[in-house]
Length: 340
DNA sequence: CAACGAAA
DNA sequence: TTTCGTTGG
Image (cartoon, rainbow, N blue to C red; front, side, top):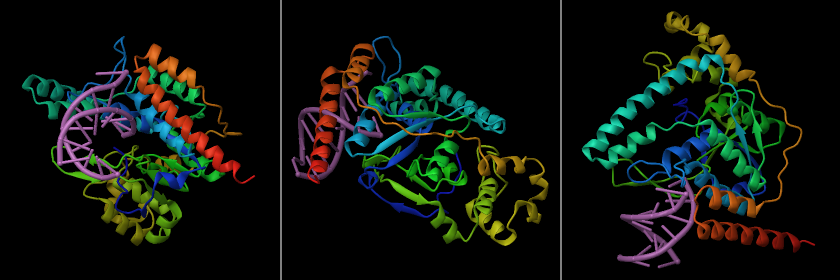
């Protein structure tokens, strides 16, 4: 999925604490999808409530937002609207991957291979409308604002970093960079270690920040040129990219010729995609204009009632989690009081 | 993914 | 106190 700019961009390690008192636009789909994919039991089944409805997204949002708010981070979630029509091929491709994974999952279960079962189950992850509604409901109890983007959430999140309404956009995808986000944060979480699938080794996952300006300067490219590099590698709007062209070759070609139209080797393949329109999606995306991003008071009782009474969360766990948040916020206001 | 609790 | 395997819903 997504665009492989990993090896080209300038990435700097950072910490969650560095984002204290800053508004961060979070790609809601990206975040929730990751919760749904990873918050599972050993057999690959997601968490669910007494009625069998999935709750992994709610669990993820609960703990992560408590951590954000405890650190004084101000998250604003940006939800996707209608995908651009050029995305249909990519959406089909993802659907196919899920169907293949479903078959592999069933086989792994039949074979009693739990590790494979979990891996393939993760690949079958899909987000239902109800989950989006439920996530918005929980955010509302938290007093955390969310925005409905007219089209791609990434684009509106990027836009907020340019109007100054957000400090950075948080997502795992590099699309934000092509969308023109001033700053992108990846791994926007404080969970340290993560297991490498199938191996007994762990790697440290730390938040990293990508400043678009620094990246462009270091690559000596304009944003328009970087977008063309992206198209060569492959974006959601031309998922396969160009044959035998990876990040390295793509960069070299654009450095040499500046524009897709001027690269002799690719002209035949270039006819097959609507590259003008792809550029347009990144350069002039449809975005939401927001007057003011408002953070409301936390409705602790609302959170507890919803999660415990309606979604089968453990009362003890929810209470102790919320108490942790209350304590952290009290401490913050005490620190603030000392200035007066 | 993040919290929890047992073990080191 | 830190590390690691397990559980959460």
